[in-house]
Length: 168
Length: 168
DNA sequence: ATATATTTTCAATTATTTTTGAAAATTTAG
DNA sequence: CTAAATTTTCAAAAATAATTGAAAATATAT
Image (cartoon, rainbow over all chains, first blue to last red; front, top):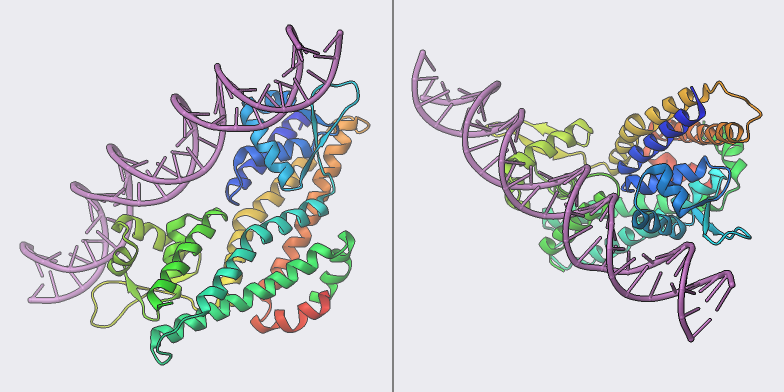
């Protein structure tokens, strides 16, 4: 297989995968492209390589920056802004976990707390089962929260060397 | 807050959350509805409670069954099929992990293995960096795979009592 | 076997999300 | 300051995904 073919395959399947994770195809593709590009790319480079419009590149790159996955890079002499992806995959993973936790898990846990305040007949079968269900989800959510928090703080090599042995 | 209000809130936010996870709103809503319903519901019950069409219910319930989150229940005397969600949240979580691993992580790892076979000048900067990147993703993917595998096999209470202490 | 109830399918419709591209805003150079 | 380059915005268009609803298929009762 040739390099360019491999890159294309990688970019495309990364994009396809993104759609299963609530991330839009283009954002995932741009991220993939930057991951396999040794040097920073300009908006025009990205437009050309992925055949997408300027506005699309702009919006999605901006999103990637807000996710902390990509950063702007000034190249001396160049007028255009350039972008690089953080190439440390462990950081990429923890960054994604951190953001999704903040954007999704935290609000859900907050909501569940609100739902707890149910002032109705506690002997009612439906009320009882509802409270139980919410309680269980909350418990699991809190556990997940703690684990993710710890994971985010952990060292990149820690996971492989310690956790895996302990968990077995 | 009244029970029905709480249920509605739960169902709606569960649905909204689903869209961030590549799951369609309705499927997530049906799942939420079944989670907070003590008794099995028929297609008509679901149609009525969520104001959605028969076809929609049918397809999404079928999907939930294929995910192993919901099962068909025959109620003696009743002609219509009824559906219940597995109420054990730990099982729900591991079931979702299991399915997503199978549907997404496994194929991605397979793809990465194929991309490894790159027959080009190994001194080429681009080739080198590409291989490195793929290698790192693969490593992380394999670690995640092992951890998820262990998690799926773990007992529901094991996570809280052991993993959390060890990981700290 | 026939009629009736129930479930499934799927083409057409509707809703949602993504993408484009050109205008507006901003930045940099001279 | 003015002009050129670059970035950003956003309404409209296109693409994608979800939903409907009625017809077809299947199952059950008499």
